[in-house]
Length: 236
Image (tube, rainbow, N blue to C red):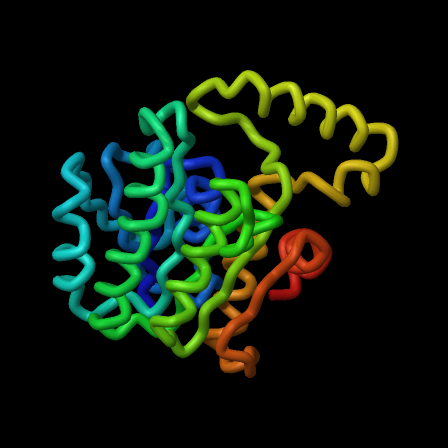
């Protein structure tokens, strides 16, 4: 059975990837590696062992990825921040783009076969806007590493409770949740629950592990996220 590595395990989607994997013995993974600046929340009923590397100095993360033996078969990456939290776009770019690519390179060299990236709807390396341009550049640079499988999820607005408060995002989340109560399709077309996104990421990785994914690059849009993470989740 395979080993999974999770980056961004304390974030909104990453935390659901971790909690879903470690309580699901049928997930194809025998162990989970976590690299983070702080420990993720403790879990009850854990059935799959989780090894944590907690280090605030992110410059040490790549070396740890390289040291994993055996290497992780699948890397789930939900590593992200905001411009405000980072202290400016340049610092945000350094974390989201530079660190992501550094860790992806280390994983590729170590022998990781499948890379699963939580990106963003509208990601475009040619965009005039900084955020979608950055997301698009991350996608392109990960694809250039030529993993056996590169799986990219492009969700819309991510619905869920974050540890830090984001005022504008909170307003849109409330709007999406309200519309969803009236008619689910009003929400699903532009916003997805973090847990559903996480399950879609896991489902896609499992399909790759089973040899059911033929394409080297699989871009999963919002509609397919809902299919994999909600409608088809129980059959994976």
